[in-house]
Image (cartoon, rainbow, N blue to C red; front, side, top):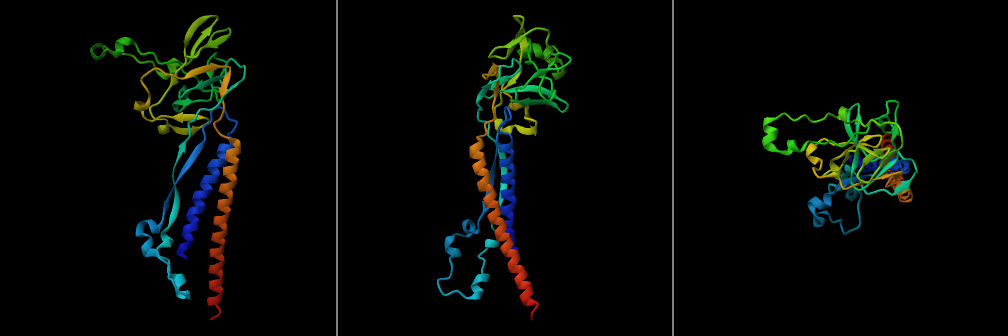
Length: 282
């Protein structure tokens, strides 16, 4: 019954697919959410041996012919990896001055207990310390301003340049209304207070999801040195890029595929049970 591992491998992969699509559907209304997709890898004996070596006997089949597997028991399928689709979501108006939506490839930089993380979810608020924070209470960071002198190699080699730590870039606001422009600069009572840190990356697929709409970037070289070209829209939120109707259709297909594989496994189980019962009669 070594052939049983062929449908089992498919069932495991398809179950993972069902879970991934179900998570996409569950977050169809989550601001800034990016859907995940899976890549599958298959191994087929025909690709290795060629079709000529696996031709079926052109004759009346005998019982012995059914035991010739032609290496098919080594076929398998597995999840080769997953990736996040970073397609832009639609901007939806909320009329909340602390809701910020990004149009472009940028991410807001926030500070969590685990370090600096990045998010597209712009549902911000102000805590009791007058700090601009995410819906989970993580402080939003201002843009890292490096002195021009630090870019001069001769000066940097002779002087010690102090780079502000993330804790020093937490945005603290005063009283009064706040406004943001497209560059992420924020104003209170008409006075410019600072600028949001909106980060763009060389390779978006190098980012890893960490839950709660947060991403982690493990390679500093992946951060673009140039200024962000993304636009910050006040009073808007970026919606999820999940098409609920399409994902529900994919979920139904994946679930039916999983059920079909289950029937195959059940058939193998019944064949085994019947074989055991027949042998016990002798």
